[in-house]
Amino acid sequence: MQATHTHGHGHDHGHSHGHDDHAHHPAGIMRWVKTTNHKDIGTLYLLFSLTMFFVGGLLALMLRLELFEPGLQFWRPEFFNQLTTMHGLIMVFGAIMPAFVGFANWQIPMMIGAPDMAFARMNNWSFWLLPPAALLLVASFFVPGGATAAGWTIYAPLSTQMGPGMDLAIFALHIMGASSIMGSINIVTTILNMRAPGMTLMKMPLFVWTWLITAYLLIAVMPVLAGAVTMLLTDRHFGTNFFNAAGGGDPVMFQHIFWFFGHPEVYIMILPGFGIVSQIVPTFARKPLFGYSSMVYATASIAILSFIVWAHHMFTVGMPAAAQLFFMYATMLIAVPTGVKVFNWIATMWRGSMTFETPMLFACGFIFVFSMGGFTGLVLAITPVDIQLQDTYYVVAHFHYVLVAGSLFALFGGVYYWIPKWTGRMYSEIAGKWHFWLSMIFFNVTFFPMHFTGLAGLPRRVPDYNMQFADFNMISTIGAFGFGLSQLLLVYVVVKCVNGGGAKATNKVWEGADGLEWTLPSPPPYHTFETPPAVK
Image 1: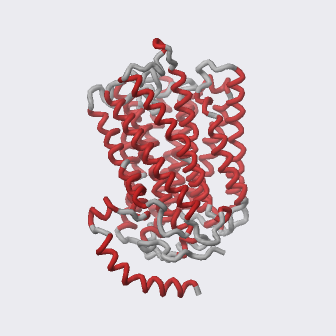
Image 2: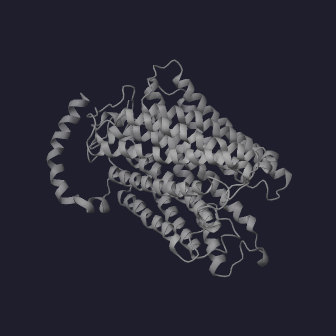
Image 3: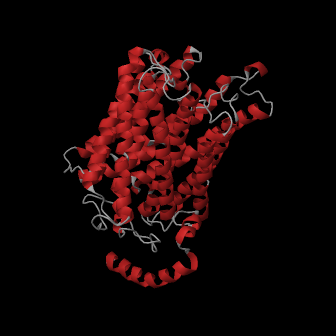
């Protein structure tokens, strides 16, 4: 009944749609500049994030080139520090976050049965703030004194003494923060107000849930970052002494404010990833997600707990023992809801009729490697251990296991899962599987040795090191170049799908797929749902 109805409607609409196109939708470049369509904006976010991913990746390879053997080979130490800082900022704010927002734009209206996002023009504006901010970041390499070299955490007093490159980074962060806040308001409003009739909150797909909670986190913490960098700006140019000890300020206060933003931020970068994995695993296990409501509560618990753990980044600043104990226990507590999630994913796979297409490979790779990153996080949560490992390569290994193998693998899984829906073409399964196995192997070759170099005491952010670390660093560098080059396979897969290569995708691309987006044609029509679908 429903099928014939929508078909009739689509047919009917075809007429007006053609007419509309001339009246309202400019073609060519202006289509992209002025677009208010959630799919177009989602595509822009994803292209922007892919570009920044390669820029950030290039900086990482420049770092690894220097670290291939001991001694100073290629870069001056000052430039090396600029590279580490910019690699961090570009990857966090330019690659991972926009990629998840791109997914939100594409998927949320389709998953909840909405015609578009709630604030379509604001949506356009949220995206177009990003390219200028990215230009500011990249341009900062070319100003006197070069880019900021204070680390992606831009700690005072170092950041208050840098050249104009620091100011450009502050402005870039301000602009990206504004974009994030607008995007989040849009997402919250869309989810709360535009769900199809019958779709209660507890019937929403998990990806939508994780984004709702992430959007609330962003609205809560982005202003805190804005406050921190504004105080830096006034310390630099307007004679305030917020972080200047000589004027009665305190550089440690900056760390407290920064990490009050920074720790929820790391969950902002992983929760949508959890959502994507929670969509993929049931599809390829061909059974419903185990423990849906506990997944929702676990996500919310992680978000709430993320606000009371920030000082675990600061165990070495001289906090009272009571504060250290509090932050240690609070950090360990986060492992509980995260463990619930991992358990539910494995329970979903249990006795399912599993097949391992590329999205599922990435989801399983994600669960395995993210869990490793989680365990090293628990190790770092133990105060006396952390005091030994603070600012060593062990920390670098930990957060790359969570952010690369966490956020990035979830994003890759999501791309392979939904690209047939987006483009109407099936990707090359062989290329997808090669992309997964090469990424997985080279990722571990790059970052696993860092646990050992960190335990042996190699500090992070150093351009030169003792001979004893030479072998492991050489292995890491070879792994990094392998990982970087294997990402070209992703570009190949995406370009081929977009250009109409590969088999035509059906509406319900995957046998076990469930949800409103799979009732739409592949690719979906310009206006997603003209009439809201009924959800039983």
